[in-house]
Length: 127
Figure: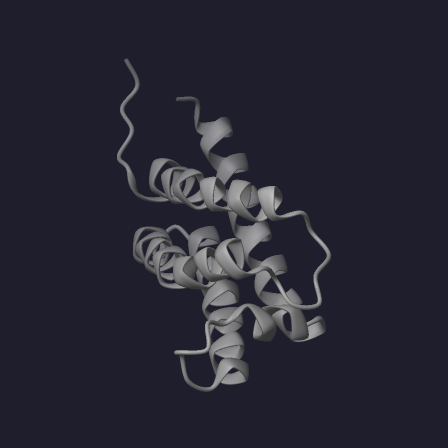
């Protein structure tokens, strides 16, 4: 893989997670609404996940924290999967999306996990 491809991919990943995390604070109600009822303190979980996304996004932009931040983002993506699964099964209160889109959203988590692993964690060697 070319170094330029990796550099730009990491920048996009970092910007994506920073923006997604910031959005937890700008427009938190949809995130609070998607938390399954069996989890405590939905507003706190939204704040924690927003902070984790921002820190992970910044972390992957820095070469000396990239691998640890990448693993942290993968752990975060796994941790929020139950909330995404919950809205796929039960709908997303306050968000007007067709149910099929909520199911398709689930496919993006494995894809995001792969992207983070591929560009932030995996070691690359030129052929």
